[in-house]
Length: 220
Ligand code: CA
Image 1: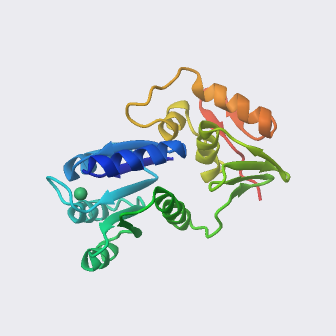
Image 2: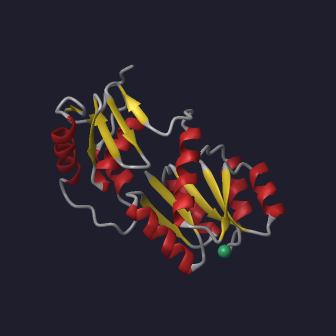
């Protein structure tokens, strides 16, 4: 999953970006509102983490512009503890939830998972398709009840496929979900990860569509 982090405070930004990378999110970090608007124009994100007090264009204006452009991306607002008006205004302007500063990264991560799954139209925290299930909180995948722990990038790749069963994702679309700006993309990384996922979960879990990409077949 790819996250846009909009935060001008270096210390908070560093801590959040590191926490997200540790959980295998691909992170793009921008430090002002205009850069945030540019980023959502050119890249699809699974969620935006938006600080409100920002240089150039403030966070509330970013939020309104994103929603005015009919962009449905989930937005989690990061706001000060005393900013009740900001919180109300943020929610009324199209934010999906907020987290209060100072916050612990694990609370932010839990709120992100909740927002992403509500936006995906499900209240269940576990992704599942046919015999395969994936728990984003523990990074555990199971097939017919047999559980395996996945590496960070294996998890990121399987999550990208399981979010939309039946959709074919190309190599570059998968790389997009695994790597943020500035991350070094290893060649053949996608093939390597698919290979190890098939070894752990069974060769039929992920299908190759020759010349196009990979998918998991939609199953009840
Ligand atoms: Ca700020």
